[in-house]
Amino acid sequence: MPVPDKRNELRRHFRHERNNLSQAQQTFASEQLLMQCSALTEYQNAHVVACYLAQDGEIVLNPLINDAWLKGKTVCLPVLHPFCKGHLIFVHYRQNSKMQTNRFGILEPKLNACDIVPVAKLDVIFTPLVAFDDSAQRLGMGGGFYDRTLAPVTRHEIPLQIYGVAHDCQKVSNGLKNEKWDIPMHKIITPSHIYSHT
Image 1 (cartoon, helix red, strand yellow):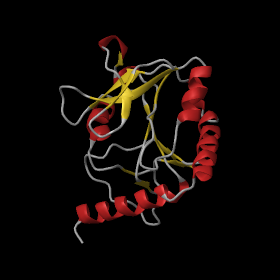
Image 2 (cartoon, helix red, strand yellow):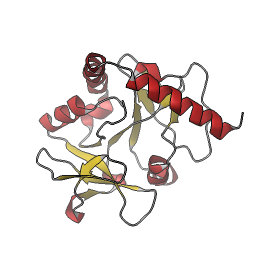
Image 3 (cartoon, rainbow, N blue to C red):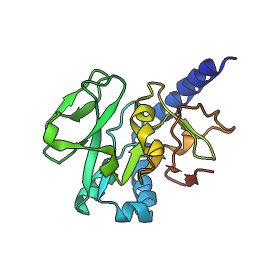
Image 4 (cartoon, rainbow, N blue to C red):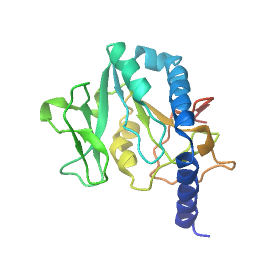
């Protein structure tokens, strides 16, 4: 089977798995994920963190976002780049931010140039994913938005910690085949475990 078909098959399977979780399981997973993240020195010391608003069964980061606000951290969310197709920009997200729905049906802060935060200013970014393996390889939705946006981080050695977050049920039993454009995660964090890049 060609690699793209295999990756799409994995996407279908693990999207189904995470969407089958009950609301109680989702809530518990989010609370456990916050505990895992809170124990990380990199998160404790971070001033600016990027998160996302969950959809399609993704693990919900609202408890983490609220914790970051309580600790006085700047929280950013990804917004589809208005000019560079296939790229994201990160925008300051506040409790009173005006929100709008993008073309994928995802809520994002209404774009204001004053609220844009350059990738180089982020300390930690928490990215969604569809599947992952033991060595912290990430399989995304296939659009390549995070890979394109974060490519300069690896090229210019920007000291940004890139963490994938997921439900435990999204772990593949065998290793994922890494494509040359895939941006490596420093860690994959689940409600029960932290996997480090090897």
